[in-house]
Image (tube, rainbow, N blue to C red; front, side, top):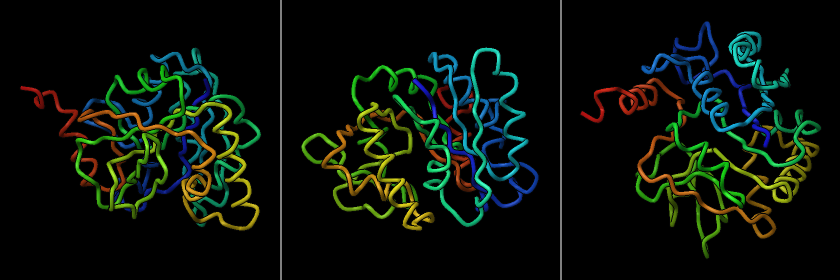
Length: 239
C-alpha cells in the first residue's frame, strides 16, 4: 500500500510557528515533528512507498524524510501554486503516481500510534471518525447513512460525527474519487477540498467509518490545536 501525505500548504493560522518552517515540521512534546511522527508510524505499519506533495519550504520537508529513506521510497510532487490552490490540486499534480491502494493523510495530522496499523488492516475503504469526540467547529465532520459515509465537510453539523482526513482507500474506490478530482481541477475548481469531489460520488464509492473512539487523531491548524495535541501526548496525561 502507498501512502499519500499532503504537505503543500503554508499553515498561515499557526502564527510565527511557521515563519521559518512548514507546519508539518512543528515540534511536538513527544520530541518528534508532526511529519517524523507520521513517518515512524507508517514505517512501523510496513508502508514502504510514500508520495508526498510539497510547496512551502519543500526542501525542508524533503530533508526531514532523508533518515527514513533506507526503509521507505519517497516521491515528491511540488505544487508551485500552493499559495492560491488547495490540496485537491496537489493531488491532481501527483495523479500519475497514485495507482493501486492508497493510504491518504494530511501532513498536519497527529495520530495515536495504533491507528495507522489498524486502518491499513481494514478490508474496505474507510475514513477515521469518532462517535465519542465532540464535533469540531472548524474541522471535517462526516454524515453516515446505512453504515456508509455519504458526506464529508467542515460545514456538516446536522446528523454528523467527528472526522479527520485519514483514509484507507481500495483501488476501485480511489480510482473513482481520483477521476472526480481530475474533473474538478480541469474545470478550474482548484481552491476547494478534495472532499467536494468525493461528495458527488458517494453513491459509487463504498467508504465506511472507522471509529477511533477517544484515541488521538487531530489536525494541527492553530497554536491552540498544537497545545491540545501536546496535552494528549504529554507523559502526565495518563497519571
